[in-house]
Length: 453
Image (cartoon, rainbow, N blue to C red; front, side):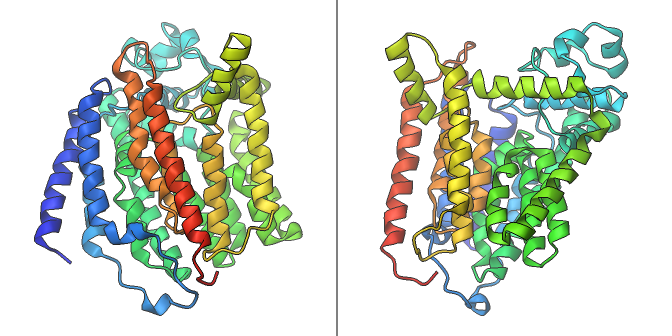
């Protein structure tokens, strides 16, 4: 339905996305938070009825409304408006281009530190310029991006070997196509489960999803697509294809590995272990073109640094860190990071195999959402684009705290107002207080409902 309100909202939101994409630099936090707040307010207004998180009864498929074509078209328009943006809130894209140019010229990106390559014949051959080097945020670390992700980097390096904006657009096109395909899959899966297909608009129109995935070039978009494709194939009883899709998602980002225990639990031990084994083999095959002893050493080195050195916008970890400073007088991230990694593993297994109390909502989507929530709450690093996976999972549940999180996580960008990247822990505390408060409220509200599961 096209109404004057929707036309006004479309025009204002399009202008705000354009300003956010093309006109706001990361250090301009007051301007960023103001414009983002306005576009997020518009998002809540236009999706107001979908925010209420009601639970459909089984067998209501025939009662579900038709997709809102105007809003789905608007979701595409917002993304297309950002096609030519040079990412301004994240500099990760520079490493994507760096790795891609190495791969396009026949070099294994897992074997070279940028600091070792710059000003060498390899850099000259691959088009690795000083300008690109100075855009890197981790030149002293080996790359951690999985093989399928590297393949897309390499494709961009081949299509645009010298142009920065050309490489950015080459990287963005697969992200855009995957994100729109995810919206289609979300609608199909919602219909399959007897839910309103328009719930997918909570993801499709979400400002964080649009700005961080399409705008700032984060490949969570393609990971989410492959995970959704895996679920769709699984519910269609194509479990081998589902396994291949999940392996592709892991080949983009390692995060979907945490869903394997849950899949084993609900496929049954025999079939689930075969599914997990096949997925593991397919993931392993992706590494074959890059395989070497140095690759394994370098990847584990970088992953170890990620869990035991990097810290940003954390919650539980920051409380542990504060206790460490108070009791021991130094940052205990090395030990705390490993401890939290172990706790995450235990939580993933408990969520997967423990029976949940009877609730008026489908159990598996809620377990997926709970798994992701605990993972990010216990992580030492939570960048804004990480929350997009929670937004995608939330559309299958009555929970809306991930949407609140997608609105307040941009407070973490306050850290970039200074060259030293100093976090404002008051903003961090506000972010997690709002998210946890909403989550606890929704949990008790759900427990008091009497709808059938």
